[in-house]
Image (tube, rainbow, N blue to C red; front, top):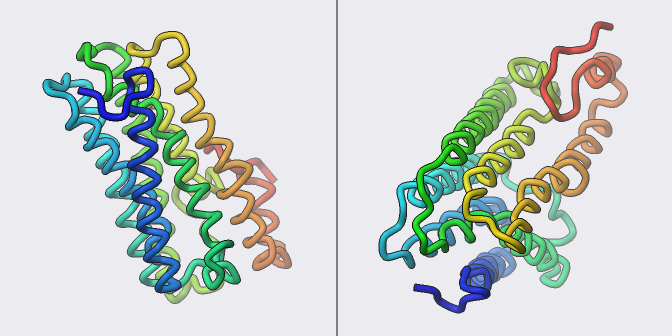
Length: 264
């Protein structure tokens, strides 16, 4: 069964669902001038879209059920982590000067809606395949990549959360655990898990559908050059740039891909 199909693959339908959900979240966030839903809505939208499209299949294959399960686990973990974090810090500095202006605030939600749709392309295509794709090597390899990615991301998030909540670390940056090998190991894990998702979907991709490869590439480029690393690096440089220990940490530690620290 296909609802609002675009070439029979629910792409238009997924876009409508994503836009509607982000619109509702935006209306609430703008009305109450709150940051508490901006990040949590990201993961929850993926969860909703995946479950809805899976539900359109009368007899989903084991691979389709597994992929939807992986997206749900990722979305709930990330969403709950970000929600707990925003409750503790109170506000997101990215929206200072924007949350009070509905037009400027809306730009973030529009970008987020577009990003969710682009990133979810392989998921939408795979879950829409009525041929019930077989459980293949791609599912196994992709699931292993996904597991590695989410493990790195979750561990890095947990390490940083614990570090930041200890009084003796106030005003310090984390350089222990995974953060000894990468300045942004959580983002590296995020990139890896989306490449895993893409690999799972490879058996159903034909012709134009290979555009789904843009999903993990988009995630990686977004983190490396747009909304992720550049903002955090700029913030950290402003806060710690005068500290020679921080500058040494930056010089010896990989920006993104974990690797042993350089010998100084």
